[in-house]
Amino acid sequence: MIFEIYSLNLTPYAMMIATGALVSVAVSFMLCKVHKKSFDDSIYMLAFGYIGAAMGAKILYLLVSWKEISALYHQEGFQLEWVIGYIRGGFVFYGGLMGAALGVFLSARYFSLKVYDYIPALLPPMVLFAGFGRIGCFLTGCCYGCETSSFLGYCYHDSMFAPNGVPLVPVQLIEAVFDFLLVCLFVVKGRRMKGETQFFVYVFSYALFRFFLEFWRGDEVRGHVGLLSVSQFISLVLIACIASIKVNKMIKYRSIGGIVSGRFDNGQSDGCSHEY
Image 1: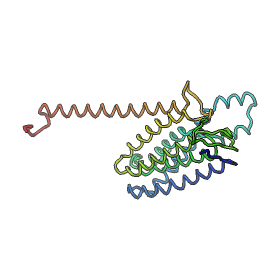
Image 2 (image 1 turned 90 degrees about the horizontal axis):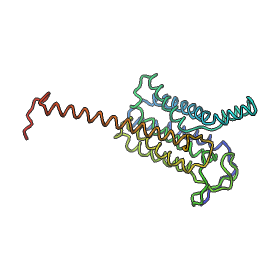
Image 3 (image 1 turned 45 degrees about the vertical axis):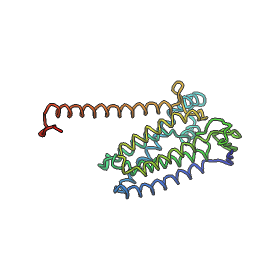
Image 4 (image 1 turned 90 degrees about the vertical axis):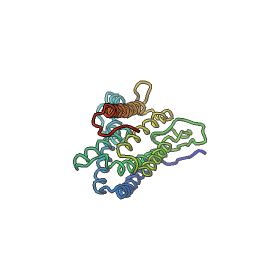
């Protein structure tokens, strides 16, 4: 099956972003009811999170594109046209993720809220929003995949970003499906998973997934760190950070357990006999 997309422009992307925002608010409302959290507080934190996501994604995009911007500046000087083009241009997801996390954290601090208490009501809507954003990328043609002869390949015919008339791996839809599956997991297991656990599960699983998905990306405007793309490099950093946090917690837990066990074995702080 080869999907053919005609007459693409930025309108489908904007429509999917708007749809994702509305759906995420509705889902947040339902989750606030389930987890008995204030919907008003949730909306404030979502708003700050989305603002942070937009700013972070744009800033990282400009940083990734700094070589091109520098070359353009030396060739043409400061031209309002290409400046506006970069400002209106792409976004980098990991910048959005960091910006969203910062926005939610700062809003929680401002309103004197415990951020992890609201993660079960905030994380699924924000991941859902990201999934809709990837569908928008698919409809627009940005963030496209590499060439393929697979039956899943699709062709663009009037894209401003992707190569036209060439079957490409639908990496945008693959990522959207992954996001939606994570949303289902968090909604179903939300009561059994603490907010902190949900956050770490999301960051670790997405980083691992994104690292391998990058091998099927075909767009070159992503920036590179050595042999890795910027997203692959960030993925490895996040995986290492999450792994180190979990290992440190395990070590502390075992150390505390050993101290407590030692105190009991030595007869300290234990008022009962151990004869069984």
